[in-house]
Structures are given as structure tokens and as C-alpha cells.
Length: 455
Ligand code: UD1
Ligand code: MG
Image 1 (cartoon, rainbow, N blue to C red):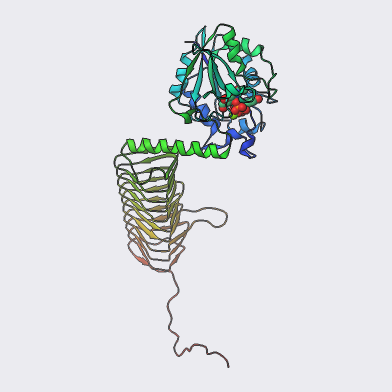
Image 2 (cartoon, protein in one colour):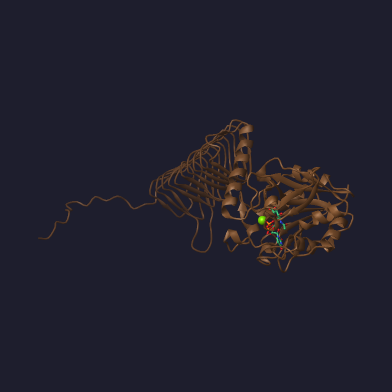
């Protein structure tokens, strides 16, 4: 097989998005449109990926500098043919060129493989689809014997041609030498005064090349995004596909229309997910995990048998098995919870390790801490980890009991098995196995009377 070179067109303005952000930087399922197209392109293992950018200037390559692509500047946007011309000097004549669009984010690898497979010395591959409403698209003009003759843009089409339902998706694959020949001959005498890539089809046919059409598995695969409604439509389509995939693997979704996966979600057996749950980044749920409604989980691992009740926010955390989190809990980055831990309502944990079986059930903040096993932390307990400049560590020993409303002023260590009386402000280390109290004594004021209203 010839070497494969992929050219992604992404220089257009995207006026109809009515946004300052270049269109290809808008996100679908948490990832920019262009990044998605580049990832699909990578899956075809090409020699190189060339991205033609222009509108929005350097902000596109800057935003996506981590991508392994060749950035090709198209200074003025003079049409799709003109855009491809910019990338051709770096492409070997013997290569196969696949053209993709930066605003068509869901084309499947298998579909693109089929387009590329049509290319040889005498034929090129063109991805087309029949649409109920073909408005706005280039139409595929065929001879009576069914062979493709040309693509006509809607604005240049005759009333007869506008009735054609088979449209150009824009995605095509062709040998570089053939493409170069066709691009050399392009003119811009058309309704938009642009150099159309689509005119290469008629030129190739005139040179004796056969156009082999390939069709996508679904219409959404080839839909381009021009406005926010189309973006929302493809987002919903994509999310439904994700939901279907999860259900096919045995995940129970209370409503497949109310789950969003913006990244990669891996689930064990018998996972149950309530409504309005959002997963971002890489999330792994163990066997029999239950996720309550309205929860957001980003880059986290949740151990088997754990129940996350409604309205939790979990980010960059590792949660053990058989734990109980929520409702209304927040686990912030670098939280590590061991097995059988309970975290209750209005509890925030940050950069802390909580060992097996410990309970922090109500209204607490635990930050920069190491909490041992079997610890009970009473309601309203707070680690004072920050002096306004630096952060300090709190260590809470195994089997200790922290009374409600305690402030632990870090750096501080509570010994194993220690008990802290409720309402204490602990500023010094407390010994193991003993009771420490650090609060004002209760007084009884004899003979005191309530003030009376002056007349
Ligand atoms: C193009 C096709 C049309 C097809 C439709 C599918 C042409 C002439 N027409 O029309 O047959 O049905 O896509 O969606 O090719 N771009 C550049 N530089 C430019 C112009 C465009 O990089 O100078 C990029 C755009 O960013 C976009 C892609 O090329 O990603 C397509 O451009 P667009 O203006 O959307 O073309 P359409 O008019 O939709
Ligand atoms: Mg378009």
C-alpha cells in the first residue's frame, strides 16, 4: 500500500457559530472538534497529518500545540481547493492523500479505511451520502450508467441538479500525483469566487480516473458543524452512542438520555447509574458501583461495591471498595479513600488519605491530611491547613475520635486512639489513648437576669 498522508481542512471562519472562538476549537463531548478529527486520523496510522489553519490565526495551533501534526498556514481563505494546495508541497507524489474536515468530528475509522482502500492508479475514493434534505451541500452528478461525473456546489447548481439527494461529504482519498494535477488546473469562476476542491472530481474523471463512492454507517458520521444547533445535535447523537455502548455491556442507566460521558468511562459488572450524571476524563467504576443522581466524576477510580449518593462532585480521586459517599460530598484532587470509608453530606476532602473504615459524615473539611483507620470525625470538624501563605499537614492516628466542631490547626498530630472533646481548637500534638480538651470551661452566672425593655 502507498504511504498515507492526511490533510485536515480547518482554516474556515465558521461565521454561523457567532463565536470569538474558531469553530474547530469548539468542543464535542469535552474535546475540541479538531482534536477529535486528528485522533481519528492518527488511528489510520498515516505518515503525517497536515492541518490547514488560517482563520483565528495562531490561536488554533497554540491551543492544540500538543498534537503531532504539521501546521500549514492558509493566509487567505480562498476555498477548499486552495486550502489543500497549501499542504501539497510537503507530500510525495506516490502517496495517497486523504482529505478530512476539521468540523466533521464523528467520521468512523472503518469508513475512512474504506475510502482510502478505493485509491489506486486509476481510481479515487469519495465519501457520499443520500440526505432527505440536501440543502447547502455539493451534489453528486452521475452519468446514466451510475458513474460519477462531477460535484456541483448548491450555489452553482441548476434547478435539476438541486433535486439530487446524494451529496458530497467533502471527505475523499486520491493519489497525490493525480490530486496535484487536478489542483494545478483549478479556476475560481464560480458563484463564490473560490477554488473548489470539488472541481477536482470532474478534472480527474476527464483524465480517465474512476470515482468510487463509499457511504458512511450513519448520517451523523459525516455531518459538519456550522452552528450551535448542529453542534448540540451531534453532541446528543454521540452521547446516545456512548449510552448504548454502556448498556450493551450490562450497565443499568436509569435514563440513557441523561448521562454524559466526556472522555472514557470503564465499568465493571452490575454498575447502576441514576440520571444526570457526568463523567469527564478517565473514569473507572468497579463491579456493582451505584452512582446517584446529579453527580459529576472526573478522572477517578471507584472501587467495587461503592455507593455514591446524589449530588456529589469527585475529581482526581481514588475511592476504595464498599465505601459510601454523599449525598452532597466533594472529593477534590489527590483524595485517596481506602475501603469501607464513609463520607457524608457537606464534607469536602482535599489532598488527603483516609484509611479503612473511617467515617467523616457531616459538614467537615479535611485537607492535606492523613487519617488513619477506624477514625470517627464528628460533625463540623475542620483541618486548618493554611496560614494564608503555606499549607501544613494534619495527621490523625488510627481509632481516634474527634469530637464535633473541632478545629485541628496544622501542623498537628492526633495520636492513635486519642479522643478530642467537642469544640476543641487543637494547636499542639495530642497523646495517644487520652482525652484532650481545648475549649473554654462552661460557667454558670448566678443571679443573672435577662435585660428588660426600657419603657
Ligand atoms: C464543502 C464542499 C461541499 C460539501 C460540503 C460538506 C467545496 C467547494 N464544497 O462546502 O461540496 O457538500 O463541504 O460539508 O469543497 N476551508 C479551509 N479553507 C478555505 C475554505 C474552507 O480550510 O479556504 C475548510 C473549512 O474550515 C471547513 C472545510 O474546509 O472545515 C469546508 O469548508 P466550507 O466553507 O464549510 O465548505 P462548504 O461550503 O460547506
Ligand atoms: Mg461547511
